[in-house]
Length: 290
Length: 335
Image (tube, rainbow over all chains, first blue to last red; front, side, top):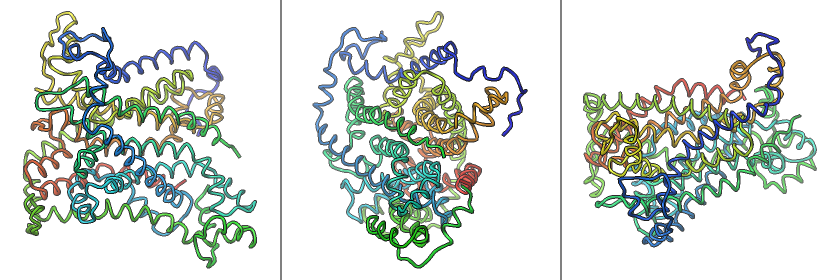
């Protein structure tokens, strides 16, 4: 791994990033925050504005007055709380199933050599090549036969299955990064494979589990096409489908839509901010060398 | 961690029955020595571990996939679905009619251009952001990842609505801001009248929405790069790009390959954004493969034609991603 760079050229200059340079990077970071964050900002201030200011020919970058009226209107929409309930149930169970089952499969692929392993890896990768929407009708027909239509479990199973291949692949990456010697020394000390897994691997795997859970949660929380087709009762829909109510033939109620959007995005953002520290501490704890 | 190591543990096996609950197994291990019992179970254990995943994938994805292929050789319409009558077999008719359609090939070209532009921009911007996140102060990194999570957490429908609002011909901020520039008049400019500018906005939406996932994944991968390795390279005289190419990138390559593959797949499947941006009725200029299959199935009302297009899409996609699949397989083999 010898880089083809002139030797001896200013070695050690960037050993510790100098303060001056870090300030430059921070400015660049600030610019990206502004660009990436702008649509989010626009969503938030649109939600806080009075309606007449939203449909204006002279948009201002900041609201002249702030009102929580849009939120009230969004929450007063029919089925809001029912749909909160469905979203929570469906997301929670599909994440638990996808991560639980995915962890087992990822451990098998990451730690064992077995007949069919290669085939399984190919299957995991190929399955992801197929646009899920192209299987909407067959899935619908099959769930109809199984009695899973308009039932939470039908959507849960679909979400768990569609997030599974990627969760397995992701967790597998984290598992193979944990030195096998750690398990082996635990087993030399008298642990069984399963105990070694539980006591040694699982704690080190926490960041990976969090990352995979976030992925599964986002997918389940944001998906709307399957929820829309597979569920039928208005009070069983998820929040993503509920958002469709704001767009009518007469136009889009942007204010309430943005307020509703914030209500939906908030739990996910809070969840992530909450676990972000765990991810960071997990990564440092996981950085055990030798 | 060579392949030999992992093989060795699998070869020394006995006839021990698999999968006792952890607690009882633990005491059994204590009683019967050190390493052999765990080796005994490792022949069947992996199969036990993958069974749940296989079952759920076969049921929810495998069966419908077979069904899609079967459907593409039939002529299923909505009335077949509701009346329960069996659709007639038509052989390759769906395929010949789809492939002989000039419109279809226009859609293919548009899709490929769209996907290439989106993936290139998403991956390069995502990588630059990940590298930037490594270099900024702690508080800035937290700010950056918070913003990116907020972007990522936005439901598809929401993100699309915000962009639709920003590019609205009457009330859109973009038109109003552009008009303020001297000599520019974008009053009531309709970005979606022209398919190219409309698709560019949709591409912007897709890229903007995909960057956080890429940047966060790559940043997570970057934290796995041993500091000592970079420092050693630096002491040896390597600089910026050299270190990245020969030290940093090899470590993050698996994640990079994986995320770019996913980008290709996801961008191939873009459907909701276009559908919502065009109020459920996308014009000809906005048809991409995923959407085309959906439109043919639901609007034109031929599930079989839609299924045939899906199958062709998957075949094209596998052609495109053969390289990536081989890369991923190599990664899966090495570890």
